[in-house]
Image 1: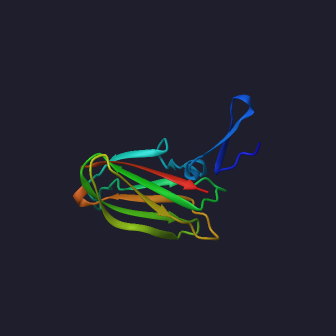
Image 2: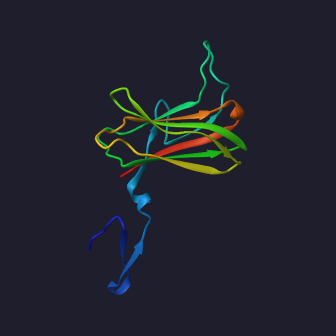
Image 3: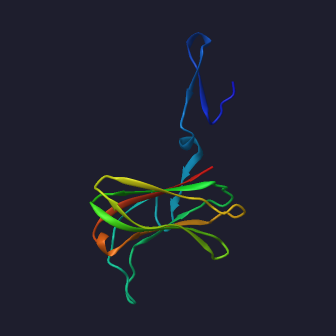
Length: 151
């Protein structure tokens, strides 16, 4: 019996084999860990913008495991309030360069989620996915953020 990513083979009673198609994305993606935190997702309340003396909490980095050859990254943002978030998504490379994939204002309603996709360079693997969520119109609002790497 051969198991593939596209089909899950189940052996039933009396030796009957049944095939059920399963979503490829669920089998081929893995959650990335939050840098400097714990777990695979982060929930934040948007702080005011930073100044020369204070920092904001708008940046969150997710670690890409070394040796992982992901074809794409899925970034999921969900809101706990009605708000418009300024969102930027970057892939960060070891040669101190970045690729920007998202730079937009995203209006979300309470409980609503949005996903973004980022694709790495053909010959290079990023070491982090940086997601910047903030904006003056979102100050005080809360969101949850997660990133998966997919093969």
